[in-house]
Every structure is written in C-alpha cells, then in structure tokens.
Length: 219
Image 1 (cartoon, one colour):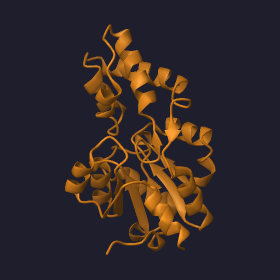
Image 2 (cartoon, helix red, strand yellow):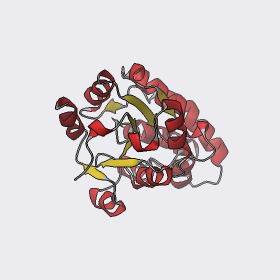
Image 3 (tube, one colour):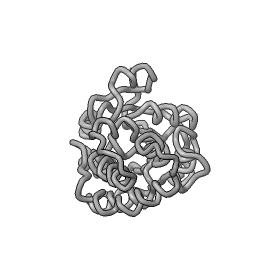
C-alpha cells in the first residue's frame, strides 16, 4: 500500500510537465536561437524530448553548433519575452498547491529551469505566495539528477527527508529523489511516456495531480 499524502510535512514539485505546460515557450526560445544560427524550426515534440535536464542539455541537443555559451545567453535573453504568456498550469495544479498550503504543509519547487524563470512564472500564475522554497540549478553545484537541489530543499524547509515528498514527471526526477533519500511520486503529464516512468519504479505513479487533490479533500 502506498503512503498517503497525509504522511508528509512538505511537498516539493518539479515544474515543467509537473505543475505547468511550458513546452511551447521553451520551443519558441529554442527556435529563436536556431533562427539566429540559420537553422530551421523544430516541432514542439522534437524540443519537448530534451526538456527537463537543464538549459545546457536542451541547447546542446537542439542547437548543435558547438557555441553553447552564446546560445545559452541568447536563449536567456529571449525567454522572458514568451515564458509568461505561453505557459499555463496543468489541471489541478493551483488547487493542489493552495490546498497543501491551507492544510499547513510546506511547499517547494526544485526544477532544472533557472530559478529566476521559475519564480517569475509562479508569480505571474498567482502561486508564488504558497512556495517557501524555489530552487534551480543556479543554487547548487550540480543540477538534477544529482541530489543537491532536494537536499537544499530539505534544509530550507526544515523537515526531515522522510517527511518530504517529491513530485515530478521524469525519470530524472525519480533518480534525484532516490539519490536524496526521499519518497518520489511521478505524474505522467510531462515529456516521458508512462511506461518509462513505470520502469524507473517511483514510489507511486499518478495519472494526474487530481489524484493528490482527492486525498487532500479527504483530510
């Protein structure tokens, strides 16, 4: 029998594919950089496949020109122009985050998206006030799947590892949680198919965030 959400004092989320659909915005910025390199546009699905492992990984695989530093700079200049209006919350995300907060549970974010981008989008979407910790790769020595970000979240939120739940949509999230020694639930709403998530053996595999809301409502 899986653990109930009631067991946890804190719930930490990934962002892209877990709380929000930001793939159109990411693809737009990738194609902007590709255009500056004289390359044709990639489809949303072609870009989506590389999301979730950090901007360096994303651009290494979508703009293969060997000029990563310049490509990263161009991506980061362009992305604020599109990341707010082209990102939307996934069904249940707002109700879940606010519901956790209302029930006294601490809420955090650990994403390989740069922290400034995550913080600005959360503010725009009206969720920033619910998060006690928003972390990105710029806050730690190594991004996910290294455990650094989750270990920092444990410290910032002031809860023991066994009382923290991590929720993500990718195998990289499952690997991160395992390395940090925390429970991980995967939600099949992101860039990886459900069968790949099953193979990675999360503690629980959800179809959507609505399943967590149902448990909250039963508290």
